[in-house]
Length: 337
Image (cartoon, rainbow, N blue to C red; front, side, top):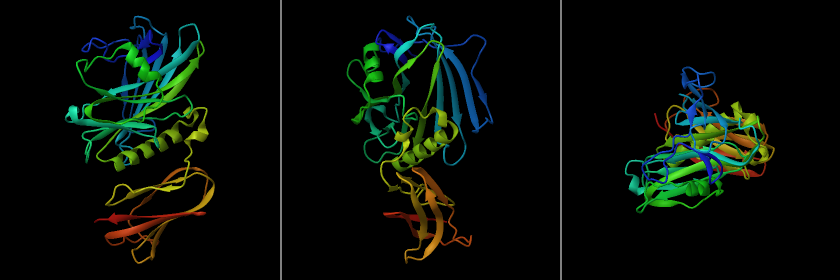
């Protein structure tokens, strides 16, 4: 959805009729959607060029959409959408908002719940409130272009109605961190407000991801963000400092139990000498995973179940510890062969 006011929104989302759907975006003439396999940086990449000429009140926007999906263990449960919006209207566009709307319907949609995760700028839905096994969500990858993230629940006689007034309230409402429980849920993730001069453009990214537990979802979110920061550093926005963690943290490894490899994430908010090591339950050091100076950032390291000599270790429970200047933390993991 893209818009500059309640009276000028272009989208391909259901409308106020409840059953109809707007069809404002069309492919540019002499172009078509193409999937590349393999892609330049991921297993599969898609590209399509759209404009909003199908709208009753078009903005004059060209949309270059690129999508990235990879078969690697770290990011296989996520997809990145990279958007470039080009202002072809002939006039400056001020106060523009843009984002993605999802109506999830996971298993039984009437008992879904949805939540906001501030650590990852992520909103997600799950199949049930307690002990969920199916989770899916979207994550805003830019941090300098504004953030509008909303959890919506659909119920009542207007179950599927989605008016321009309601769309605009979701597109411009900032971050809504309230959860919804045992209802049919939808979510919105987007940027704005931004200004685009005539002939100019902006770029932003949103990821879609899925998992079978909240721990897995956070792991996928972390790896997707690492992917974005690595391949699209120019699109981080004007507030790159916001991408840095606020506190030291050691996260639970994923997967756990594991075989043959697991990933351990940790956050470093300031420059520090960092050591991450694996120990036996008796306190004997098994493997030094990280040792050295770190700049502020989000990090991850993998352990493949070997010791410092490169030999496989026995199945069982181990301890992993981080020491970063004055910060120390310990967690347990299980190697299962």
